[in-house]
Length: 457
Image (tube, rainbow, N blue to C red):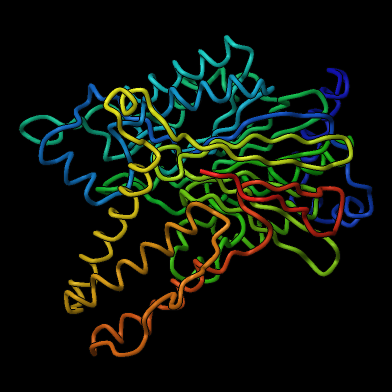
């Protein structure tokens, strides 16, 4: 897309924004009657939720140990993992990188500055990055350093500071900016728009001890999105989207059990995007390798490509290529070695898998014991729960055992817990189409995705 048509698109958007949102709604049937815009050739990488933590903020002591025990992130290794991810992205020789939020542990200014330094390194190599905030990144009350006497508050960042810090990674070069959020439109390659959406509720963090995990797009941002997409449709510009929160349920029961990982009114938002020919969105937040599709009776469809966290198993980096025939090829690679582990003769891949499962099992075991489930049952059930979560997080889950979750022969409390949560475990094992790690998606219109075999880890 040349600069003249880019200016025309911006002027068209300004005209639409000057009208009411109802006017944009009336245009929707016209947009649906238009052919889907043709994609240019594009080649890019995606990694998500790096949760970078500067080790100089402290990785020892009781407070840090308690934080790690209640979570599943490899914070102490986060910078070394990021270094490996940056090397992998460079070796892919991609045109750009997408990072859908949770850039830092808890929004510490020091961590943001460190993350920016790695993005600057990539940019010098000819690979610009585009970011959006996650729920951990802005106005986070948990921004601390860990000292011998306990956690100590350190500066976090405001929305305005976030945009300034990442000016070179989506904001200053934006085609369009949403005045109501940290959302923007970029043109990473000529003729392709990236709709980068900020649904985080950081303005509600004041007075809280932890950041709000849920996400919602305000009515003002929805109006802006509609206007952006109408402008793109009129100009014949294809659009891909990126946001932190999920836009499609990735397993049966996600909305019921983990609603904070889906943007509020995900059905309405996904329908809005698909109505304007946006058929793929890159997300994070749940720390899982999972791709799920949503289809409508009128032929519309949308793929939510969720990418797992860099610092939890399976430590993924995605490579994506789309061509003018609208075939999007997605290949997943995994960080299986770190120099510090290799120097000690340790297998990082095994450490990541084992520590992740043990963390899930420990958290679930403690929860069941609080519900007075007997210790032997809690050990068995927590193992089954951990395996289900781990399978979903790694993607392409396929159950080959005898029993996904024990339901018979349990104590009274064990039976109650499984009666209320057993469907969650079974839902995690039920992999919704298409494939999660290696797949080719047809963005040209209705049809099934051509799946490939899962990569070896």
